[in-house]
Image: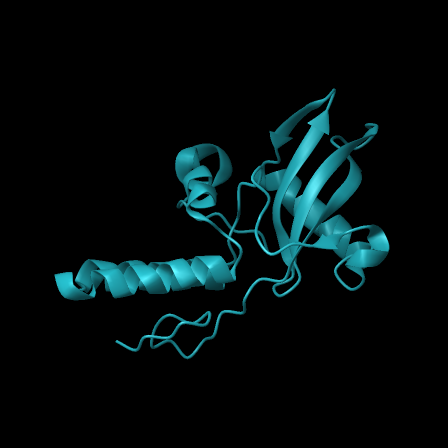
Length: 168
């Protein structure tokens, strides 16, 4: 097994780009003819895609579901927000905000699965090394242990069938 501490953690030829996160607000209707509501949105410009979002309605924030994340992604693409996020009020951030329940791109999931495979196969004296690689990878995409816990706490609600939480 090769040990790399960038954002590649294995012998894979596919390098997973570190996240370039931005956070901001967007007004978006929850229904076709509804009044736009405030959404807090985190975008990864490296992928580019919506990583996490919350809908704020009547002063109460709730996590956006898969359908809402997909809709926001389409709208933000159509408005060219990914090309000029600062023009739309989005600001860089190095880690996901505490409220964020992350989603993962297919390449990120594949890399996490590869790391998990190494963890399962690792002899006891190499487990700490594999965990360091995993932690470095997660940090590179802006995710903390707390975010991972939130991402998997309610998989039936936030993950597509098959358990993968992706937004493309």
